[in-house]
Image (tube, helix red, strand yellow):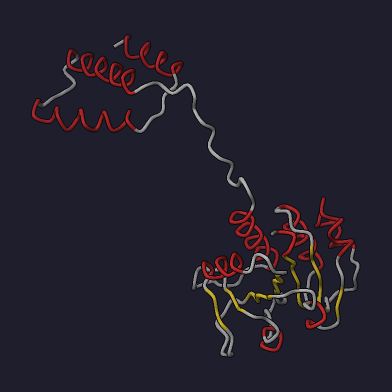
Length: 234
């Protein structure tokens, strides 16, 4: 799935941002990064420097003179925009964007991002199927280009990468409820002797809260022994 998704930066202004974007792609397993009319000459040493370990992506990056050529290899194209556009194009919330990616997971998908200062033009967006927006603080909606890219990379990776997050390790050494109840009963008796349950009318609710605390835990036998030793010192 991830290998079917490519990123296109339209008229990026700072080569450093291109390098950061390449690094973001590699962080999450993506491989395709293309440019449309970058402002600075390409290839660029500043982009290579900021890409760190993603130089391989920079080396494979292709430069196009027009967005229509850059997106020819994709079946579906999504355009990132920080603002709602007055154009006849379906605007997706971020959740809708992820759902749409899932629906089109068998297709080749292109994600296009505009220049840092102005974002994509309406003419650029006209080449897309959908427009999506990253939800941010309404009082400050400007996001750095590379930050936008890494957020998208992470969200797609999170939703599509198998075994992410990794399944929680099964605890085979978890104590039985019987052992847990024995521990809590022991603690209750100790607290009773110490006069903890005062006033007496609150004892019931205090015991419920105590059992709720321990009921949420999945203690191992080793942890049970440690707690038993601690409580025995009361």
